[in-house]
Structures are given as C-alpha cells and as structure tokens.
Length: 222
Image (cartoon, rainbow, N blue to C red):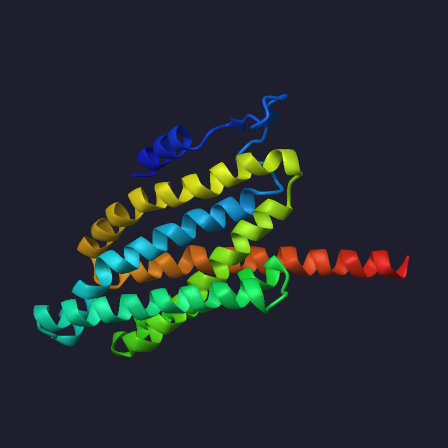
C-alpha cells in the first residue's frame, strides 16, 4: 500500500509551478524544508478525516451494539455537527483570532490527537470525539494552509497552493483504502494509526513554533 501511495502522490503533485504571467518558472520541491512539515500535516489530516468517516459507523455499531438504522442517523448528524464546527472555527480564525499559524496547528493537532485517543479508549464518548474532531480539523486546516503560504515567496505560492490541494486528493485515496484494511485487522487499529501520526506532527509543529518564538525573542534583544 505504501508503494501505491508514493506513486499516486508523486503523480498528482507537480514538481514545479509556472507563474501565471508567463515569466520564469519557479521550481519548488515538495520536500523543501520550508513547506514539507505543512504538506505532511495536510496529507495526514485529509487521510485521518476519511478514515474516521469510513469506519466510525461500523465501529459504533460493532462496539456499542447499535442498530444499523440508528447508526446511519447518528453518524449523519455527528458529521454534520462536526462540519459546522469546522466552518465556525475557520470563520473565528479568519475574522477575530489573530493567532500565528503555528499556534493554530498546535491546538488543531492536539484536539485531533485527543479525539482519536478518546475514541480508542472509550467509544461510547463518540459525541465528544466528533466535537473535538471538528475543532481539530478547523484549526489544523487553517494553520497548515496559512503556514505553508507564508513560508515561501510570492512567486512560489502558486506551487504551494497546488501542493496543499493535491495532498487532499491523495488523502481521499489513502483514507478509504487504509481505513477498510486496518479495520479488517482489528476494530481499534484505525484510530491508533490515526492518533500516532497526528501526535508526531503535533510534536514537530510545537517544536517548530517554539524555535520560531525563541528566534524572534533573540532578534528583539539584539
């Protein structure tokens, strides 16, 4: 599966982007140190979102002995509520909060990590899980797109926009495949696998944000 993901990723994601005004092309690698963290966050975010959507209904039915009809209604409502929270968070970030992208990423990834860990430990707390997922997705989505855009020059931003869009497409392919495969192994494995990468990127984002804050503090003292 890893080989398929790599092939699809490099097929869908362009290696460079030409400027719209016809001037010199600006090469920007997907592995560029300025954006690779944010591209990775985008890929993980889109993948875990789909994995949750694909498996949560079956998981609730299997673990809590809920009827298929009730599960379908319940999951539909929960996904809709989570979607509204995502929209609300993004409006809040765009209009009122003037937070750094690193802070948005830290809050978003931490919320997602808590959501998957909670669903793993206590599936009966699924309402709180979806609330946390809505908060996490809203903050993470705003954080990684903004951070990736601010990390490069204006001429490189079209390439970054292409990368952030492409990883969502790759995640839409990876999520259903990984979710069904992992769930067939064990009911809890999909959420453990989701929590792991999210936790790793939370640590990386927190470390990067801390490093940036320390660097700014040094510059002010000079």
